[in-house]
Image 1 (cartoon, rainbow, N blue to C red):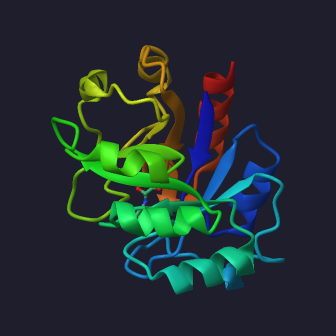
Image 2 (image 1 turned 30 degrees about the vertical axis):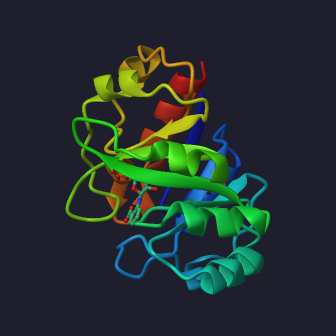
Image 3 (image 1 turned 180 degrees about the vertical axis):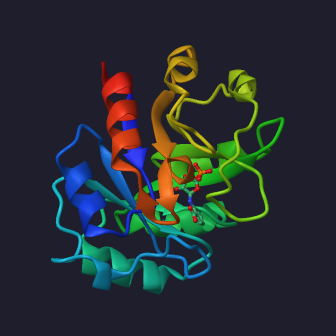
Length: 203
Ligand SMILES: O=C(O)c1ccccc1N[C@@H]1O[C@H](COP(=O)(O)O)[C@@H](O)[C@H]1O
């Protein structure tokens, strides 16, 4: 099971995760988020060998391209209302994409329209904000998912969820994404909680 840790802002968290077994580190480029990326808090920009994911909400293609180039982003996570055509444009330019969808008690319609233009779906929980709501949806909804594309499970995953994650048998479950439930403050992760979770899930 691959692991993405999202919303990294501090040098300490970045160094810790770079030396851990996580696969993806997420940086949020959305100024309405308390986890919005601030380069000034890091020593040498985003200096890591892990896969770097930039999270965007209804951002322009030009700005995504600028930030992807500036920070060497490996993946773009689209976490707003981006259309299949928007994904297609980025994909055609060579970007690897996670497209997020907010779920409650069923899968959204129209996932098929996105499938050719993205690398992976990301299923989050519907809430007040576009992301980082810290709430889980009913994971049994995942049984409805029959497409070929892999998906990332997200939304309110917490330190005590390792066993429930292991119990999910869906063949397309590719990774889990953890965020606000591992924080001391928005954008500041609790490294001890991360350590235990990562070690348990990677066992
Ligand atoms: O975390 C945020 O502030 C955020 C803001 C806007 C878009 C996405 C955001 N984070 C993403 O939200 C999900 C779920 O996070 P949580 O576990 O519920 O806190 C995760 O994929 C983050 O990448």
